[in-house]
Image (cartoon, rainbow, N blue to C red; front, top):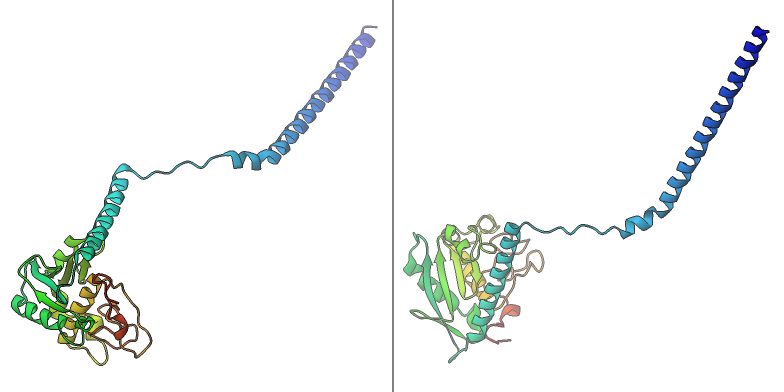
Length: 258
């Protein structure tokens, strides 16, 4: 009797345990399906969530922004100065005046530089073809021609002028002393080789051309004469070196000559 009762109780416990296991498994499956359904719903709404997220604003550090602002201001000031200089120029008796100065340590013959520059500017093959003459004055000319030590050229406009080349900024037409004394590799390696005298004519005419209102030009075709406003010091681009402005370049927005 007792054995039968024990058997019945044990069977009941096993059945109960089985029911509990089934219920637990059923509950687990239900939770799993609910989680999957929730995940699928999240995937459907994910594009909406992404589109609603705003990209964070990225700002420059204060020191970098200050440098950028200063650079922009310097460029604007230089442009304004050049425009003001252009507006201030009035050709009296068909004469443009200029004064001559130096910057840094000068080892070149400064008197020779001034004489050569005047001859170049008034040469009948150059800008004088516009019907104007260039007269050197002691100070207060329409523009200032500067013979500068190479290391000092960037002081006129650090983000534009470099130690390697000549430069024009506002009223200043700056000739790099290193280029004046030795021309450049591109010029010296050209075939046929250009002379130092021709290079000096070219660099004075090129930089004065910027003051007259000209921008840079490229080579018009292999074997053609380079425009005076081509950067012949850097690369002839297949053109032949040329120290004088082409007929198509004989104009000046600064002087109002077309």
